[in-house]
Length: 418
Image 1 (cartoon, rainbow, N blue to C red):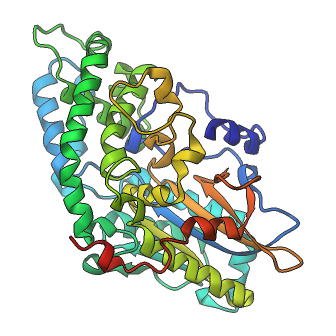
Image 2 (cartoon, rainbow, N blue to C red; image 1 turned 90 degrees about the horizontal axis):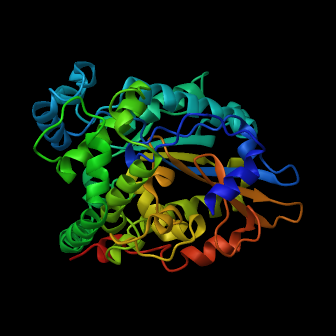
């Protein structure tokens, strides 16, 4: 399990004593308390790193604001007025990077500078040694710029490169893949059926727990959608404002984990490994680019370029699918269903709280030994993850090549054609 591995590599560095709420994609970034969570191996030479990162904490998207406005109207007299934050219904801020998102992104950039000093030192001779790429969204561009400014305080690197949305097969691939868009529609019935099953099993428990935390009793029961929106508001409270005493008081570890499961029923099918086959391969263009960069680095290590690519939660989910991270992170056999027991749900590999919190990142470190043998190490949110087929965190590069063999060099336009 990821939890056991995380404890094993952390050396007691994990911080935080607050109760742990599982807040799905609205989870704040789990900052490691020290860099020893993933120290660079001393007996290997680091050649290159390749990171794929999600943007920092953002405000709600415009479509979600409608649900929040509804909650403010329907439950405004049942919660303290301080809980009703104007920012959360301000459409001029919709989907934009928040102040906390800027801060977290900058601190992450600082830690990357500290973690890989040998890479940053190469900038003195070649400004392209480290590069930054972003999808064409305000939140990803702003995240990339905050990260770059902190990681490169001397401004030696080139500006962030932005990929136009209409040609982005690397970071915003869902927008350029018609087959994925069609598949998203086809899984909706299955998603609805599984969520209906979940609500039949766990709905009454969630209703009772959340209702008792409200100021007034009402003859009208809370709907599952209302509870889910309050759960999202809890996530935003923590991620945007570090506020734990408002919406989050309505949930505990069990109820938040159940609502994460309810969310993951959808995420695992729309973006994750339990939906259409295209979900398993849509990141092929990204990995083709990564492998090309790895090959170039191995041919000429002295001019190797490290890449930091800034995308979205679904970018990381698509990457996870291709790597099979759900198998590396969990014990429960797939897929995620509405009738899973609570115990089963805790051991599943696909958990958005772990996989795609705000500012989540997945890194591939490339190493060579004294005989020029190539190795890689995989990091998820700055913590080592061991892929199936690897006997330790540092693994022969051939294992990664084998896993990606069917997707590297893919004809993206063909696989995405309807």
